[in-house]
Each structure stands twice: as structure tokens, then as C-alpha cells.
Length: 405
Image 1 (cartoon, helix red, strand yellow):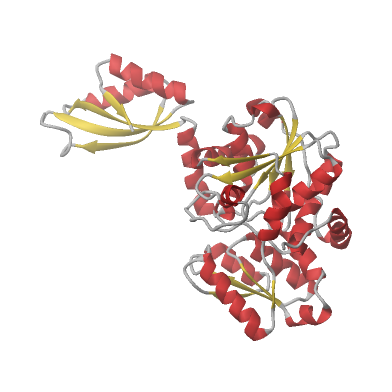
Image 2 (spheres, rainbow, N blue to C red):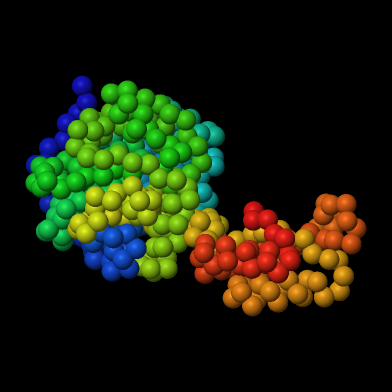
């Protein structure tokens, strides 16, 4: 039988954590409200010291250890925020922390965990291989294994976020929560349904990794294939047994979001809220932008922004994908004469339409049988999809055939 977690345990966790965990703000967002139609509030747990809500559960689990276990140390398998939370609070509490990471773990997170005092062991090409090795080390070295999303102490710690939300938005009508293994939504839904059962709880998974959907269909956690996603923090192959048992009956709606909407949500956060969030944290806004939640129009809705630890190198690529999804970055091919002035005429037509050329590539070898013609591949910056469509229509009307890419 799965281990249960009670509201009293979440409330005790909050008292236990005290000032060591930031009470993060939950401000109303006028721009996000305007583009979604709901009255949006953002729970900014990306502002925790290590950039993630995972600190809540990590510190709670460490504080609940018996003295001898704390002295011996803990171990976890993680390539991300759970590792950072354990490393940071382990260093504050004097608990030795070992983290097993797959060999593909982002270098920035490996370096940060080391800087925070954790012992890093890189093993295996998959998270499952890293986790199995962590279990072996725990047994051989007498370390306590702390599961990243299914340990009851972890779930209780994550639930403290919902206690804060209910105080910060007392007239709350809905809360939208990202789902990976389920620890966050288990704690959040437990608190919400215990104290405000009329509040709608909405869970969001990336379309490319749907372990909670699979668990719901089967009635229990089952393994699913992990495919690469912008929301890498949600890419979990197996929902937690305890997390699923707690959250499944308390979730009102369970949705998935596309990679396109995730990238667009990250872009909207940067532009409208001046916030950098990781893909997992963007999932709630992605769901709102996808049009799947019309029932929340005009409703006071909290989006849980659980983390801001996105690789800077990835952020640039994601923003570009968001611009493409928004119709503000487009690419097309055009067939023009290979005579002097033809390219200048094309550039002039694009400029006259109010678009900006980002890149032009000539393709003579594969431009067709006409040796006097050349195909050019043009990347342009436009205002939106309508502007891009107008540009292509105008070029065609002026005798320049184009094909959108």
C-alpha cells in the first residue's frame, strides 16, 4: 500500500522549515491575464535560493532524519533541481550529500552541486541507470536514499507551497500545476482539496512524456518512454506510487502541452513578466495559451512557476522556437533571376512590407533547370503570423514566387 500524507504533516513541515525556505511572492499578472482571459497570479518558486520549489521537500526530508542517519549522510539520483535542493540544504544542516547523475547531466548543474558541497558521482547513460547505482551505493555505504518526488517527507514539503498560495490569493478559484513524477501536485492537491475543495486543480504534462496520463489509464504507475522535451524537469518515465495515490483522486483536469506551446510560454514569460523560467515551470502557462482551459476565463487562477534553472545555451534556442511559433520569425524560399539587382529588388520588397531580413542564403545548384534563376532561402523577422502571411502574399503578387518553410 502507498504511504499516505496528511494535511497535518504538511502544516508541520511548514513550521519545521520556518524562514529557511523563502515565502515566495504570488503577484497578479496583468499582461498574462490579458492574453489568457483568466485572472492570472504567478507563484514564483523559481525565486528560491537554488531556483526551484524542490528545496521545500529536500529540507523537510533532511530535518526528519534520525540523528545517526543525518550524520552518515544521504544519497539521491538526480540530474537537476532535487540535487540542487539537497546539496544546498545538506550543506546548511551539516548532512553529507551524495548525488548520482547520469553522464549526460548538464555541466552547469554538476558544477553547481559540487560548489554547494555535494559529492557527485556520474554513472550511466540514463536516469534509470543512475538511480540503480545510487541504490547500490546507499546499501553499501549505509546512506539514506531520498526519492526526488515520491518520499512522503518530500511530498509534505512541496505541499507547503499551496499553504502559501491560499493565504496570498484567498479568493483562489483554480491552480495549474506542472507534473513530472507527481510529488508537487500530490502535495498541492492534498492541501487545496482539504482546505478549499471547490478550487479546481489542473495538472499539466508535456505531450512527449505522459507518465501520469499512463498511470491514470492503468489505475497505477506504469513505465512510459521518455522523449526529449523542453520541459526536461517533467521527463519522468514512472509516476511515484505515493504521489499518484494522493494526486489522482484530487486532480480535476489532466492535460498535455506541445513543445510549441512550451517554447511560446517561455518567450511570453521573458517578454511580459521579465522572468526566466525553465520548461517545466512554463507548462501551466503553455496550457493556458493552448486554449484547453476556456472554463478558467475570468477566474482567479494561480500558475505554479516551479523553477528557473534553464541552461543559458538552451534558452536562446527555445526563445527562437517561441518566435517561430508566434509567427515572428519566418523562413521561405523565393525564386529570383540571377541577374544583378534581383536580390536588391527582393530585399526592397521585404523592407517595404515592414519585415526585417535576418539571413539570406543563395542556392544555385538546386534551383531547378533554369540556369538564369537562383533560389534564395530567406529568414525574416515579422510582427506576427498575419504579417508573415501578408508579406508572402505581396511577394507573390509582385511576381516573386515563394514557398514557406
